[in-house]
Length: 513
Image (cartoon, rainbow, N blue to C red; front, top):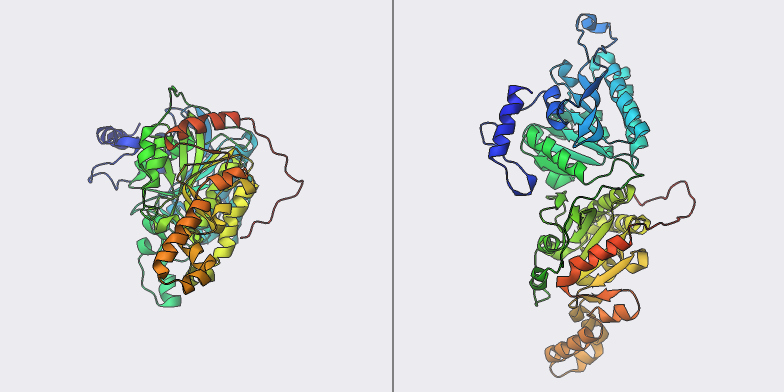
């Protein structure tokens, strides 16, 4: 083990925080590892077996025949993480800036083919200046060969990309096709065209960090699913993420040890405020339901009105999609719909059951949303849930209004079990807005319109703004006390464990893209 890794491991142990996250002190937080050090840190000790160590490029133009390096700028092979087989490649920036050549691409393609054939995750540690320009179209063809394999592997094996340096031009499309993209703050960036080209074409002056840095992609574009402060934390994040995933699409994630007791969580009873317009943090609901410290959030800083991530429930790995009342009241918008749809489809690919926590007042209104195709993006989420065949359970914690009720894993689109808390409101819209429409004539004739509106609002709320009307029709399977939610869900997911769905024969559906 290199002295650099040993020092970082010592620092990590000293500065360990809750939830498995780490924070290295300021002196070392920006320290970068080499390609081999990254692999060494990521994989179990002595487990790495290198493939293609003696490969060299074949270029003789522009004096390249005098620049020969074994491995040709990428380290490829296989090993284990917590005893599980994985395939990995790490681009080496010290060799031609990690630029991709024909042989460089062939090495990556070889282990991708092996990963698909064997059925094990593929992890790419990206750190490259782009295509090797001395090779012309051959390097571009190499990228296309990798893209093609990314698509063939999609939904078959988990694909994880870590951006640990530059990733520009055509190189960005491989990570974009993979399931998860992690970035390192202040040392990695992704963009199709760099700042100099942007300046030339649009006359905009922008830095590499602002254009395509980790924080930009984590909060604005959504390209990055997770950011880390340094290489070590990024590699730790990969390990943790992998623990929630199966080896391939024919397997399920192995259960972890979990000692079950009564599983009643009284803390859940006091989270939702009595005032229906007062926000609360859905993270508190998630924490009250799942196994202790098991939530691993994805896309935390992007489209914050919806929460997605992995957790464990009774030792089982599950995916969670939840509205967040703390952000725009938990409405569905362009970004949040796309974020949730992508996560839902990943979970369905890899047999990860879905828990959906609902508190949604509807879709976000406005010209910005309409002009940016909220209809299409909302339909993506609707499509994703309707298509999913994994066990799917919904809990309505408070509001479920309008079309958003349908979209958020309702019984009508194939959810297996739908629960609601006693204070849940399931209706076309809020009582006030509905009353203003239904009783418009009566309000106009009333001597005291505001008093009459309050009366009618109460009448409408008693009739519709509750979970019991939906339960009468079977749209809600049971109205449960919040404190019993964890116990109900553990039993329900155990019951659904062997669920099978026979879907219509087709090549593939046509999701609204």
